[in-house]
Length: 129
Image 1 (tube, helix red, strand yellow):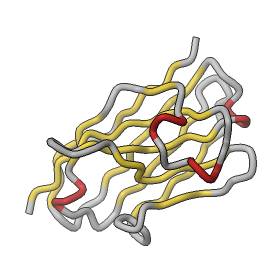
Image 2 (cartoon, one colour; image 1 turned 120 degrees about the vertical axis):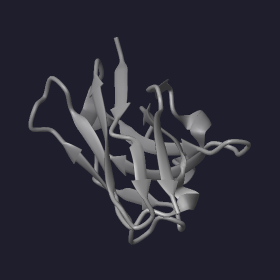
Image 3 (cartoon, one colour; image 1 turned 90 degrees about the vertical axis):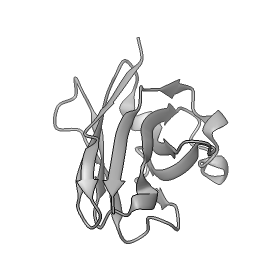
Image 4 (tube, helix red, strand yellow; image 1 turned 180 degrees about the horizontal axis):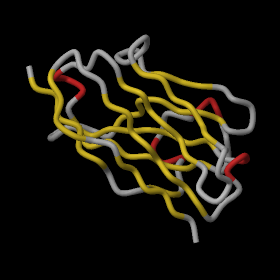
């Protein structure tokens, strides 16, 4: 039973930091790409950052490059986790953040939400100005 559980959201002032966690189970973590997406009210869900657990490649949206860092933690194999460290947050980062798992690792389309078979529930991030 594939599960992804996102947590770590909250309310923070502009310039602050948050670390989101995506705890996963029920699939072979090393074969999947994990993506973080976000959706602001009235906007499309967009890819923020992705990591391929098979070869370590990472992707960052231009809007978050240099501020966000994605990483995988395999120290507890019963609950492999992907983190999204978010620094220097801006009001425009406000959104519901979701993590998702893609078994195909087609890097060319890694930012497309339809590539991802499994999704966790979102966690709200609110950045005040």
